[in-house]
Image 1 (cartoon, rainbow, N blue to C red):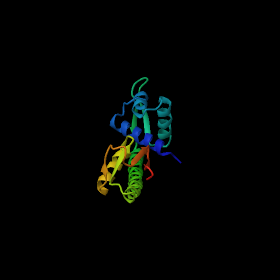
Image 2 (tube, helix red, strand yellow):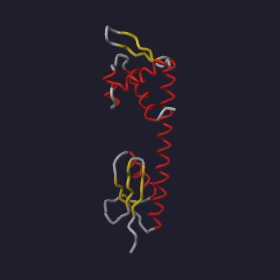
Image 3 (cartoon, rainbow, N blue to C red):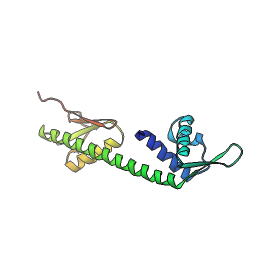
Image 4 (cartoon, rainbow, N blue to C red):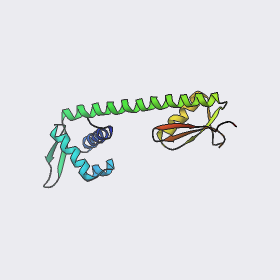
Length: 158
């Protein structure tokens, strides 16, 4: 079973090859942020499974062609990626809504959001939707974003 990272790499490889059949492995590795050997491994698998053909364009240069099966794979991988992304989005929104309920129960109508990335944007949008102000006030409860995790930090009333 392939991991989500491997599927995303293969999706990206197929998209890049479709856009530029003359792309080389070094350029693909840079675009993916992986070693050339990783790109080579993925390409060999895609070729062995019949998703990509490698044709010799010049003496040392290859041209990669996506087969009809490869186009179908790219479409399936794209759909899977979107479905996974929406699942993460929905789960994150639900988690944030639960945290905001606790914030309201504690008598607050505002929060701070700590962290970076797309999940912070999801938190911010959910706060707006729920009528909770996003502030920088250090006395406000905080939604701490760490990767895909969102934790609520509230000071205990004394």
